[in-house]
Length: 110
Image (cartoon, rainbow, N blue to C red; front, side):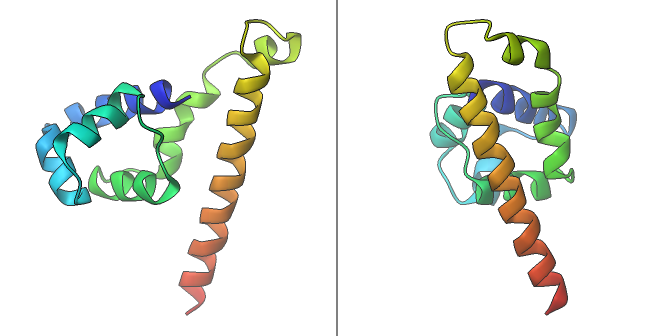
């Protein structure tokens, strides 16, 4: 999952013609840490994901959409060695997005 998200972030970043250094500076992290996010080595927190979306002028859904592109049938059939791990990753992402949506709604009410 992290590799898919990282790859999507890289595509969006290069489309905006930003360097890793520029995005990392806006995030307040080192270029190396940001590179690990794009490579899928580091996990992406919901806050970092939201900040990256803001920097790249896209929605979080634009970034996470790449997760929907994998065939859902493979998960249902239990294909692959890590199918249960992928399901848990999907559930984690769902709850993270739900939490973010709730926080944004709360913030908009204030």
